[in-house]
Amino acid sequence: MTRCWAGSGVQLVDPTCVPDTFVEGIAEVEEHAEFVRLTLYSSRRNSDGGIEHIVVARLVYPKSVAVAINQQCRAFLAGEKPLNADVPQGVLAN
Image (cartoon, rainbow, N blue to C red; front, top):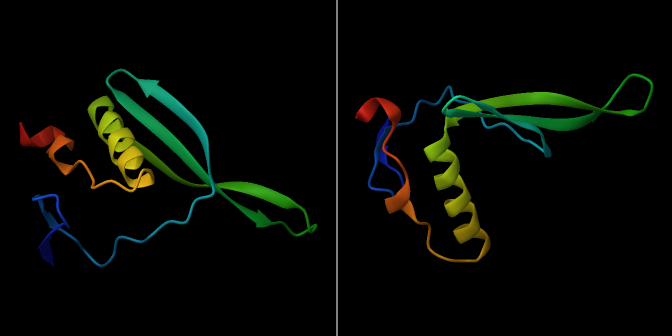
């Protein structure tokens, strides 16, 4: 399915097989050359009844995307219109 994401002007292919991932926290942010790796976790009860935190996703993206994510989240939290014009069009698009 191809559609234009709301307000972004970017044509995306949105396959149905990409799952949503629920996260409750950030375990680590790492820098690797020109990339950032974000490790995300969620909590669950273990067999002993205690709580354990399990890594559910690792996102790796260029530092320019980290800046765009920061801008987008700040705008969203402030109730402002997303700053879609500042979102990079992808590393391979150049």
